[in-house]
Amino acid sequence: TIFSNQVKISPFRIIEPVNPGIEVGYERGYGERWGTQMMVIFLGDYFDATSLDEFSGIRLAVEQKYFFAGILDVIKQRRKYVSAELVFHRSRTQTIGLFSADITIAGSGYADSVDVLRKTYSFNLKYGVEYRLATQLFLDVYIGAGLKYKDVVHRDRIDPTHMMSGPRH
Image 1: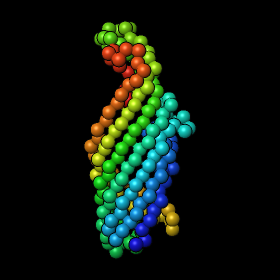
Image 2 (image 1 turned 120 degrees about the vertical axis):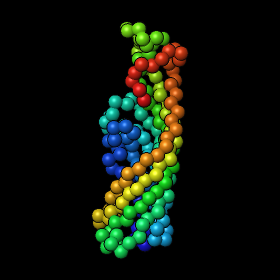
Image 3 (image 1 turned 90 degrees about the horizontal axis):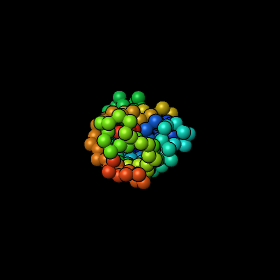
Image 4 (image 1 turned 180 degrees about the vertical axis):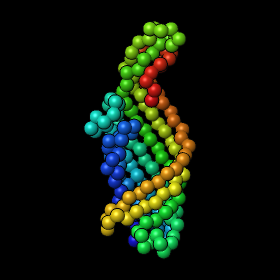
C-alpha cells in the first residue's frame, strides 16, 4: 500500500496550552484497510506557553484504524477512517492554590504551593481523513468522542482537610 509505514510528529503540540509536549509516533499499515498507530508525548512546557509551573509527564496512546477503500480516495491521495484509541496520561505540575476550612466565609482562605499529580485513562472513538500532501508529508484530521477516568492527587499541602477554592486542574 502507499501508506504502509509512517513516522509521525505533531509540531504544534509543543505550544498547546493544556498539555504541551514533544509528540512522536509510528503507524504501521497492513492490508488495504488496517493500520495501528503508537504515539508517545513527552509532556513539558518547553517554551513557557502555559501558566503551569514545573510541568512534566508522559502520554502514551495506541490506536487501531480501519480505512474505507475507494478509487476516488486513492486518486486524491486521501483515506477516510474510523478508529478506536486507548490513552494513558501521567503528569506532574506545581501550582499555587487557594484553600480554606470554610469556603463560604469571605477572606478566610490562604495560598499554598501544591504538587498536583494527574493520571488519566481514556478510550476514544474517532472519524478521520489522512491527506497525502507530498511524498513524505501527511495531514491527519479527525473528530471523536470518548470516555475518560481521571485521578488527581495533591501533595505537600499545609492542611489536606481544607478545601481548594481555586484554581481547578
